Image 1 (cartoon, one colour):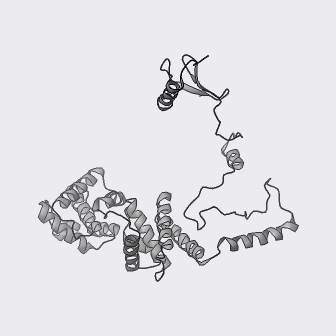
Image 2 (spheres, rainbow, N blue to C red):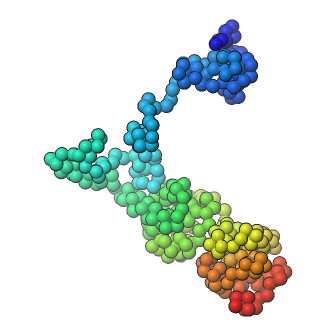
Image 3 (cartoon, helix red, strand yellow):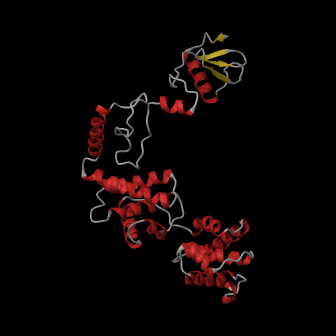
Length: 326
C-alpha cells in the first residue's frame, strides 16, 4: 500500500473533494472501497489509501436473524402524526413479563397494573390531547375502511393538527373536520376518492364534510388542484374488469372532451362514467349503465346526460336508444 505524501493543503483538499463526489482513485482512476477491518478507504487497483481512521456509524452488536435484530434494537418505533403524542411517550407493556422474558412475580403485578392505569391517564392531560386522540382514531378508522396508504394517513393527520393549532375546530364537529382532512390528503396525493365515498365511512353527511373542507382549505392555504375525470379512470376500469384497450379509448374520449370544454361545470365522476360507457360500447365490451353508475357512485340519469353531450360534441358512433342496455 502507498500513502499520498508531499501534497500541499490546497491541492489535497481539492482532490479529496473530487474523490468524495466521484468515488474514484486520485492516481489511477479506479474505484475505491472501504476496508471495514482496517478502517481505510483504499483503491482496489493500486492500493492508494485515501482516508483512514473512519468512524463506524453502525450498531456495536450483531444480529443473525430478524428476531435478534428486533430484540437488540434500542431506538423504538418511529415518530408518527397518527398518535396524539407522536409516539414519543413511554409505554408500559400489557404483558406481565420483564425485560428478560421472565414472568413478573404476583406481588408486583398489582403495582404494575396501577402504573399502567396512571400511565394511560397521564398521556392525555388536557382537552387538546383528548381531541386529537378521538379525531386521529376516527381518521385511522376511515382510512382503514378506504384502504389508504400510510403516508396519506400521516398527511391527513398533519392537516388535522394544523386545524387544531389554528383553532379551526371550534363550532364544528370533530368527525367532520377529520373527514375533511382525509379528503384533502386524498386530493393532495391524487388518490381518487369522492365525497360520497368519504361520507359513507364517516359519521357525518356529505354537506358537513364539504363545508369543513372548504373552510380548512381557505384557512390553511392548501393549494390543491381540482380533481379530473382521468384520476378515477384506472380504478373504475379495474372494478368493471375492462381491458387496457377500453381504458385507452376512454382516456382519449376524456381528453377530447376537455379540449372541447365539456368538463367545465360538470362533475368529473359523471364524465368519467359516461366516457367508460362510451368506450365499452365502441370496444365491444359493453357494460350496462346501471353497473357503471353503481361503481362510479352516480345516477343513471347523469351517465345518460353526459353521454349525450359526448355523442353530440365528439360525433361518436353510438346510438342513444335504450336498446343498448337490453
